[in-house]
Image (tube, rainbow, N blue to C red; front, side, top):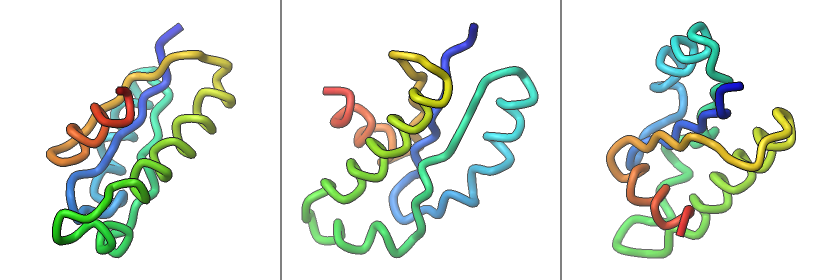
Length: 91
């Protein structure tokens, strides 16, 4: 069974930008969701402030996907800053 996939948007990006990518992955049989971030959700991180609010969104999304698919692992896909935040989350 393929692992569930979580797409983590890039800095100041809205989740809607990644809907086509998520749909394509789903059509290929990969259960996929995008962390439901809005552009304004990134504002508290501007100026080198904490990314903890973004980590919370990621954590909530990962837990929901893992529960839905009864999986203890996921495939993270992070675009730009979403990639380094994914590394922070996984660490």
